[in-house]
Image (tube, each protein chain N blue to C red):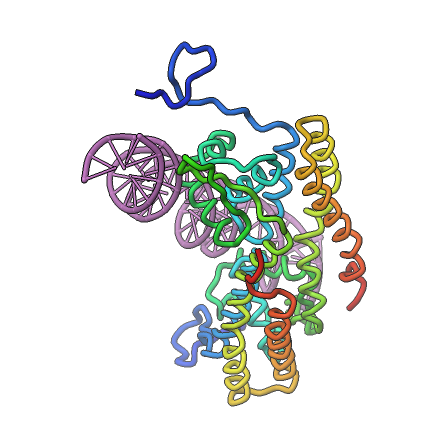
Amino acid sequence: MKTPFEKTDGRRASRPSFEPLATHELELADFFVRMAGILGVPRSVAEIYSLLYISIKPLDFDLIQGRLGMSKGSVSQGLKFLRDQGMILSVKEKGSRRELWHPTPSLATSLVSLLRSQVLPALEQSAPALQRVLDGVQSDNASPEVLERLARLKRWNSRALELFPLLLPPPTEA
Amino acid sequence: MKTPFEKTDGRRASRPSFEPLATHELELADFFVRMAGILGVPRSVAEIYSLLYISIKPLDFDLIQGRLGMSKGSVSQGLKFLRDQGMILSVKEKGSRRELWHPTPSLATSLVSLLRSQVLPALEQSAPALQRVLDGVQSDNASPEVLERLARLKRWNSRALELFPLLLPPPTEA
DNA sequence: ACGTACTTTCATTAATTTTTGAACCTACGC
DNA sequence: GCGTAGGTTCAAAAATTAATGAAAGTACGT
């Protein structure tokens, strides 16, 4: 029987201990947490990304969990989110089934995909809705001012919808 | 003595009744709520703005509260938020101390101010933090790759910080 | 200058979001 | 093929954020 993480003093098999985060690691995490907050991404996800971002080598599940002191569930969900957004990639050492995670080369691309996934659906749903609002107002108590406001809103929405695919091409790259 | 809102049946002075929202009003509210959600602005605030946006004339506190069916506190805080962001303005009919609210002419300007208030503080705090992270990593276990990543991050941050005031001039206009 | 119409404040409650962890998969190395 | 390392799920708990409303200002019309 194998004790998975033998302490170096050899006294007893126990849960492995991980380095607590260093000052600069905490500070980078802060940065990512703040930025993520603006986009409504939970702190745990930002912390995971931050750790991978500042790490020399790809990191495995247990190390992430251990160093950040978070639950298995959070690590699993956080990695899933980052993976789905194309923000991280995994490699495997051969002979091990364990995945090792590292950030994708382009953070820019990642952020763009994140924005896209947040904003595009809202824009898309809005186009027909705004038209219906315009119709509703017209049959109602139409005032030139309000009509103009709403028309402008609709124009914006259309333009944004056209521009988006140009600025932020859908996932096609490594 | 004046009963401010006499019911039409004339039986008793009671709390006034307000029109429930029409379909197109609900739909516009939906739109604003969704957009606001992206920026982390609470639903109640978006609803208030939406109502003012689709209204022909400036609206008073009680009408907003009544038609949206929300508490005094929420209306007060919502109006405060929108006012602070420069998204709404008030007028007064003379002889009344009641404020009547309407959206500022430029929604573009408003949104920009909103973004500014969310993003700028984060960017500002980050600049020195990122420098400290770089220093920390250098003294630590410096790897060219990680250094490059962090340097790039810092460059981004600086550029964003420079660009922001150009794109989004601080509140100076009507 | 008073009284009250109108608004704000803020402690409490409600709603929502995030995290946890134990049970449950699943596929790989043996 | 079996046993388990490695990971996922998801219902429940914890944390965070938003809404409420009674009490407390404030300033305006008289």
